[in-house]
Amino acid sequence: MPRIDAFLKLGLEQDCSDVHLAVNVPPMLRMHGELMPIKFRALGDAELEGYIFEILTESQIERFKAGHDLDFSYMSEGVGRFRVNLFRKSTGMGAVLRHIPTRIPTFEALNLPPVIKTMADYKQGMVLVTGSTGTGKSTTLASLIDYINSTKQENIITLEDPIEFIHPSKRSQVIQREVGTHLATFSDGLRSALREDPDIVLVGEMRDADTISMAMLAAETGHLVFGTLHTTSAVKSIDRILDALPADQRDQGKIFLAQNLHAVVTQQLVKTADGRGRRAIVEVLLMTNAISNLIMNDKTFQVSSQMQTNRAKGMQLMDQALLEAVQNKVVDPDDAYVHATEKKLFQRYVTNPDLLPKVSLAGG
Image: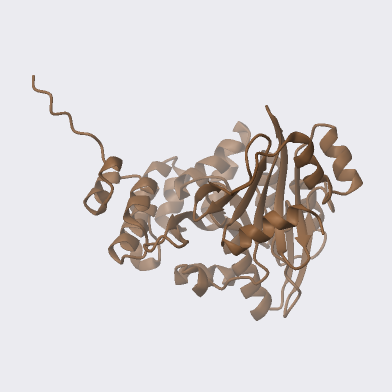
């Protein structure tokens, strides 16, 4: 058994999400959003290299020694499955290993708004799930794919870096392809997918203009595309897509979004009220004629007000969702305050006065 498995097993026993390994510090665990060291010596460069190289293939070792970062999945028998990022920094190598649950959680287990489940019923177009790294985007998409896989007869192609949740084919056929293993880039995978008779394509990360353009083409030509962006609001997601396109394609991009973007779900993970876990809080944009017109007329800054006044349709801003979660006592009010945009709305609920802005008492 690789020696690294002992750290991974300890992490799972402590219910952590990530195990961090780096030179000159002891191993650390991400516990409910906070990084905590375990009682172990600081790792040396040769020691950590020994741990990591035990789980790499020869080609991975060669690629890492050539100066490349590595993203891959690792299955530890008797422990679990992990997504691994391996990198070098100023003091030596480092690695982050994120646990991927074997069982795909349901919408209900994730406490997601019911409207997200309806996004599995679109026949074509695009749905975006966005948020910063580690906010549960992959988990939400896995729940959507598993729901479709269990209830519909579709050809589903996923393009991932790396493959995380495993989807055995149920009522649907699920083909999972990994960047760096089965294909060179996401855009290459999308080009191939369009020749593979897909009904649904999942793009693990829309990280460049070529991938975004290919995903738009897939959505325009009768396929349902699920994609992710590292953006922190629905409005920023729309702007990110338009900004990624060449100037001469911007108008075409606006038309695409107005006609083919169905929804944007933006996620944050916030500590639960009891401090024993984290809960996904989501912002939801659903395309309407009014929002389409705002996009076409370069008025995306007004989209938030449309979302705020259309809660009956299932839309909500992040601050609205956070405030409701605080009032229902399901999340920690201090952590909600940290994540909020309009912090004044949350000040009355804060229990740690150090978080609040300081008032100057100096006289003039």
